[in-house]
Length: 238
Length: 384
Image (spheres, chains in turn blue, yellow):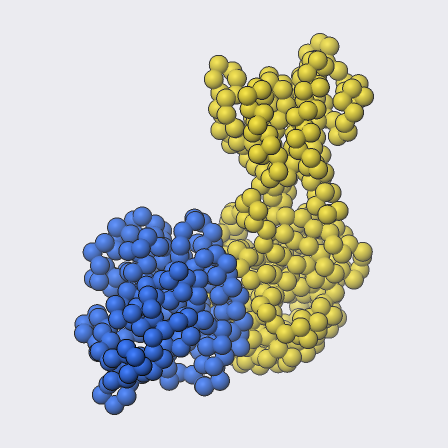
């Protein structure tokens, strides 16, 4: 069973999507499409009837909601149905006042305990297939250290699997020591990596079950779309 | 002696002697795990000093946490907050005591020693959380520092309480932690009927209570309650089950038609340190199959009988037999009516123990029955 990423040719590359109940790291430098992958993954889940939990450390639930609304007119409808929950680890810290019954506010990214227990609390509330979108691990590491975050993720990814959630975590390339990145990757079932090579953007998949190609593949950004343009049939790389 | 303020725990521990260190070892993911703040509050209420070290969230958030239980933080002039959080995120702090180097356990030590030396009198030092400080300062360094802090606290007449989230640390570190504290109390998640938490004393070096446990839940604003998610009330038709539930519950959902109960009733009992959800199962024969369904997940059962109708005792006992190994109390109701059989007589006829005489309609004896069942449930949990 697979969870579609919502990006057509990426799903093709992944032979249909990422395996259900797996956890995938999206590892990319800033501004080259990491967020698009997250949002498309969320929307594709909603379209398939899944529920979504956003864990946000770098923007408020309010901003995320606005951005999602711009992508899909049905987003508000999904929210009204209780299919979208936010764990907002940003707003309380910067004293934003927006409230919502769908959001849990945590005042600090150091409070990993509360983040974990809030996710569990939501997962337990109702029987549903969940997609957990965690943006980002980098912030957690910056506020404490990689080992502590590693232990946190070890617990969290176990819980997500047990409770039938498929999860996507992000990490920003360029912010961490190589050893930290390797430590976190070690915990994941797969990694979707983005990079900038000269003027080209490229994507690569590691792990994630069976895939067509594990090479770097070109993509372009068009507004809120990420389109794979490189060929990957029969192992060819463009 | 320091008390935790959690009645049952205090009863088991017989208080915490001054100078001891206690670790609350909390399974990650336990929602509202924060028992330490209750211990702090309880001792502030008793007029003792309280030092609260925070490292995971802001002083503002502490105020909020207090308010969730209707406690006013400003009221406690013997409370000192040590802010190990603000410098961590580079925020300004309004607290008098700020840990300037939150990555260095010595920075914590210096402040705590200074505070404890300046205070004349006993109190509690609550450290929230040990796991975070270990993550920040290095595991070994932090534990060495904590050992020094504990020694100092002990000399100053302070009892130290630690919150520790048991993330998957290395066994060597966990071993060290187990040796470092005088008492270890484990909090874990139980989730069979309704999610709740289990507290188990793993170690207490001043008395022999290892293995004592109970299940609880934290309610806002009421606080910590020993929590029983499901108790069934059974018994023959018209024995007074509904009256009994009404008499002990604070809220009650009746399902009655012409004075007979026609569905499962529910009530919540709040009594002393307990909270329990009780479910009344109607006594008509056609509801018997329900008993099997409910039997397996019930934590306890009240068998309500009409003490004036010994001819129904046989049926009553049959009903109870569907709840094998579940703690029970027999509620010998309608003691105000002529001909009501007394406890001893019923005991012989039913061959059952735990009988309490009641007049449910006047609320007589009902809490006695409730307390007895709570005791039996705890006994059962503690032998398993």
